[in-house]
Length: 170
Length: 170
DNA sequence: ACCATAAGTTCTATTATAGAACTGTCAATA
DNA sequence: TATTGACAGTTCTATAATAGAACTTATGGT
Image 1 (cartoon, helix red, strand yellow):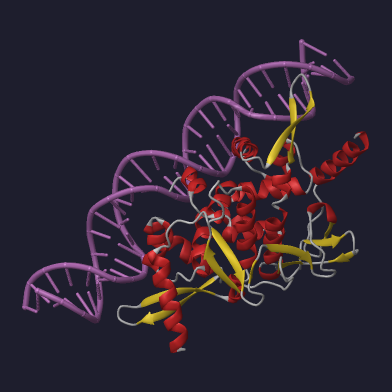
Image 2 (cartoon, rainbow over the protein chains, first blue to last red):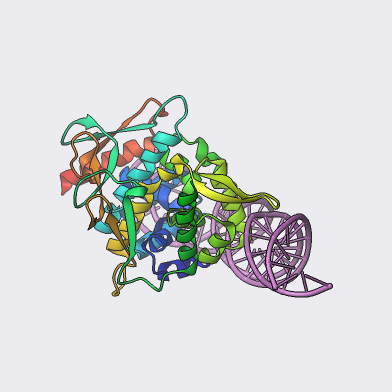
C-alpha cells in the first residue's frame, strides 16, 4: 500500500495515519508542542536529517497541521506553527505520552510531568465518554458502520464469529 | 536515528513511537481492536505484505503488546491477542480515530460510529484531567522535568524565550 | 492422489532514510 | 572590504525498509 492510498481509505484511523503515522512526524509534532518553530531548532533537537525534516515539514503544511509564518524578509524566513487542526492533535500526543509513562519508563521514572494550569496539580490524561463522562475502555464500546462506511468486510464478520464462539467455549 | 535508539530516549513519546510509530503497526492494532486475530485475516483485511506482517507481529509480541495463543496443535497455529498493555493503547487509537473523524472525513461522513455500551449513546472520546475532570487543551498545560529527565535542552530554552517575546510583541 | 487451509519464508525490484557536504542570502564583525 | 556565522534548505551516495510475488511445510478432507 502506498501512502497516498491511506488517505483514501474509508477509515478515520488510516487517514490520520497518513498524516502522522511515521516516526519523524510524531517527533516533529512533539517539538511543536514544546514551542520549537524553526528549521535548525527542529534539526538540532531531533537529530533528524535536514532532508527528511524539510520533507516532513512540507507534508505537515500540506495537510494543514502546520502553517508557515514569515518572521524575516530577505532572506525569507519562516516559523512553523501549529494550526487549530494541529493543536487538535494534542489528545493523541498526550495519550501516547501517557502510555509511555505507564508502560515504557525505566527505573529512573518519568522524563516529564504535566501540570494542569487551572487546577494547579500534576495530572494524567483520562479518556471519557462525551455523553456520560465515564472513563472509556475498549470493552465498553460497540462499533457501528457510519454513513461513510463501505460494505462490511468478510474478514471482520469471520473474526466476530470466532470471537463470539471463543467466549462461549470459555 | 535508528529504531533501537528511540527506545532509549528519555521521552515517553519517543519510546511509544518505537512501538507503534509506523503505519503498519497502527493498522495492525486497529484490526486487533476489531477482533482480528489470525495471520491470514490480518493479511486479507489490510493488504499488508506477508513479510511485513510477520515482522510487525513479531515486534508487537516482543514489546508485550500482543500475545500468541495456540489454537491448534500440529501444525502449531497461534492467535494474536492484545495483552493488557495492548488494551491500554485504546485511548491512543480512539484519539487518532476521533481526529480523523473531525478533520479528515469526506462528504459522505464518518466511516464508523461508536456506541458506549453503558449509556447506550453514540459518543466521541474526550480527554480530561485526572485530577479535576476538566477537558484538556495544550494551552492549559505546563510541562516540568520529571525524575527520569536529562538536563534541559538549549533548543527548548531558546524556543521558550522566543515564544515569550513573541507574545509580548503581539 | 489431489486440493484447500494456514502461517510463514525467500526472492528481487523499488522506495525511503541516514549522513555528510554543498548553496544562497543576509547581518554582524574584523 | 573581506570574513564569519546564522539560517533554511538542496544535492549526493550508501544503506535499510518495503512491495509484490512465489515458494515451503504440515495437515485434513474428498
